[in-house]
Length: 550
Image (cartoon, rainbow, N blue to C red; front, top):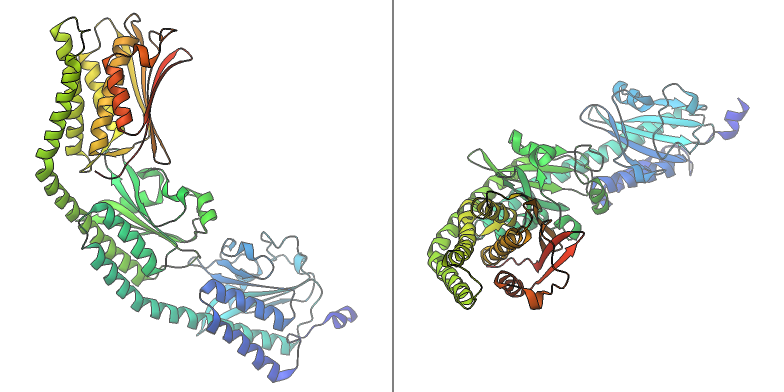
């Protein structure tokens, strides 16, 4: 037809015959020498094929594990690389993949019943289209799609040239992948040895975890590595280490076992792979994944004698597979890390036992200081009242030691301290004619021994103050304890809706011993203390910076 003859463009537009074909194949193969990754290689191949063929656009779709296709390179819509998928047999490309035979549409491509649209291409009119299989050693790796916005009469020479170019692209990609895997296999063995040797030499849990994520990311070329440890009491995985520079990533919240992919890895006690976290429905944190450019992920449980203690999560910046030898290396590394963590904990326990007499001595000195301060007060009506106050302060310190023996060695959860103190107050301070309800809520903030002891005393005084002064007249009401951490600053509120503060109340003039202790300890924490009437509630607030040392 005249229109076909008028718009016919040869597959090799710059020159003719065997010389032009050889040059096109050479250029495609040369892409493999410059590329540093699969995505970079495929993008260069697509651009080269588009240029030598005279097409308006070139897409490369590769086979996935389910015999579907994934868009890996596009000259027209590169922003959709690794994000567009076609199911098995879907569209012209799906049929080409299954049959292994090329398909050519000279004109009216969009009217063809098997023409499949996908995002980013819909607004670009396609009149002619070629879908050519990428074959390597008898295996079809994917499909190369060429598009033109005008009719294209494919001659026999054009079809032969495109087939050979597609074979060259398949050979180039296959050789690149095998070379990468062969090289990284050797690197993984070295990386495994290096990381295992380093983490086994550290006696500190936090240092082991930080070394683990830093070295694993460096040696295995991951974009982000994280370690979450299992908090069995709350059925949560708590972020304990990451080498990600983004502060938003470092502040990721604890996640429940049942709501996360990492939790699934622990439940099944095996690695879980996510091909692309940006589009995975079950992944928590799509926005952050897009922001940080995270794509494929593998979660490997840290196990000790088949008991999971945490999970190592590794992310790549491109969609890719995790070969069996890489998975095996990570599993071995995870087991070594779990052993090192347990060994470090045993060492810390030994050290804590040796230092316990020192801690007890310091706490006894603190109690003595509180007793001397209490001795100077004359407001107590009876000896029993004075002893009761003293007992409450001693029990607050005892609560920290009790939790220390049950929690993570030298760190205690502030919420757990609050729960323990509330239970004590309910049993010892609430009179039978009073009906006071307690509610402890907020973040799980872990404090070291020194801060935990000081904060326990602060909490004890605030709760006791709320009970004694908030419900002196009122017989029923609520006491709320709230814990929050933002950017390393801890906020602690104790509020009650009982007796209201006097209108003329000033902390500097009207505070009693308990509030004086709170004010003094708050300043000792490097923080600040406030008390105010807010919407009918008496609200006490203590803010301080969380420290990580002992």
